Image 1 (cartoon, rainbow, N blue to C red):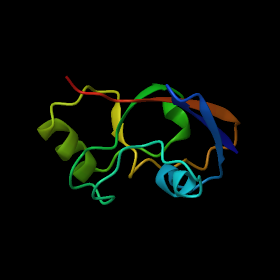
Image 2 (image 1 turned 30 degrees about the vertical axis):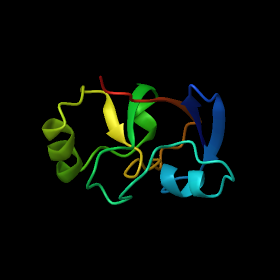
Image 3 (image 1 turned 60 degrees about the vertical axis):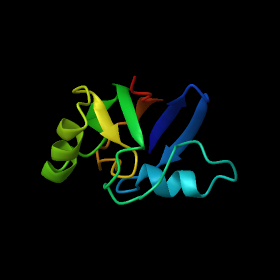
Image 4 (image 1 turned 45 degrees about the vertical axis):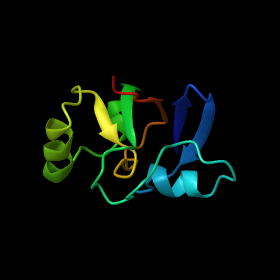
Length: 101
């Protein structure tokens, strides 16, 4: 199990291997992540990956292309594409909602 801490809301979620962050957030009554397309078309759900990169699946080439197009930093991922990896060690992933200037 991987714990995901979403800042600045200080919300912790427990995700199992193969689970997408967006799906776990959908189960919450209060939305925490800005969303529009939900399918990697808009980039509004950008998150800064602060810790725990080893516990998530790497970005696909399509996600990386969009992030480059948006001028995102190297540690930015899309919340709609973030999936917990199947690593065996319990890890905490720390994410901050990216607010581009």
